[in-house]
Every structure is written in structure tokens, then in C-alpha cells.
Image (cartoon, rainbow, N blue to C red; front, side, top):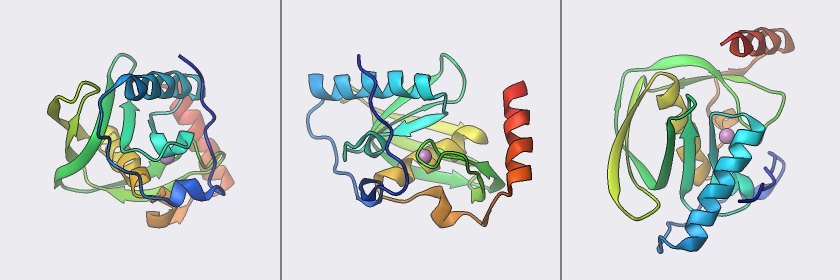
Length: 164
Ligand code: CO
């Protein structure tokens, strides 16, 4: 495994549309393993391949330790309800915005071996699914945010997250 560099929002790679994965091979496994290591080091809730400079439809979400979800060629197949709250991105350090997302999201995806599965996320996990899948189409949360948070709001949100 190897750490990869997370690119930040001025890089136009983040704006490109990723291509589907065609072979579920060693290269894909290496990419996923590296993304996991990179996410753990960075301490975020999710990471998409374009954030490490690879324009492939691959992302990972880990809301709670031990609940890591690898998604290859994911698509959202169902949404229910709505939630509005704070959102951040490892590619946009030091900022947060207020974003509305569905309350429940069902994603159809493939695992690293090419096996299809459906996964349902609620609340923060639903938010993470939407956020990571958006990366695969070159969209950032700042594009859909109602507004960005002030420095004070950011500090409060950071403090409340650290307590958890
Ligand atoms: Co992000």
C-alpha cells in the first residue's frame, strides 16, 4: 500500500468526468488499498479516485471505523427525503458549507471483484454517498451548497465533530 496525494480544488482534474472501471484487476485493488490508506491518514469520511488524480469511477466511504464501503461504478438508484447540514471535502481544506441532500440514498455498485451490490445510507452516510459520487462527475459540494460557513461556524462544527 502507498499513500497518494490528495489534490485540492484549484486542480482541474477535480472537474473532469471519470470513466467506468472495465477490469476488476490488481491495479484496481492497488488503487482501492491506496485510497483507504490515504483516507485513514487524512481522517475524512470518504474519498473518490479523482481526488488522488485517477479519473475512474471508484470511491470509498467510511462513516464509522470498521464500516468501510468500497464502490466501483456506483450509481444512485433511489433517494428519500431531505436533510440540510454541514459538509466538507478533503480537496477543499479549511472550509465547510451548508448543503441539502436526500435523507436516504440507495447506491448500486460493484465491489473490487466485480460483484454487484446495493447499499443504503441514511443521514451522514447518505450525504457522503452523494458527495463522493458527485466527485466522479466533476462536481464539488461548493457547486450545490446553499452557502459556505463563516469561520466561527466552521470552528464550532469542527469542535463538535472532534468530541464524537
Ligand atoms: Co470531497
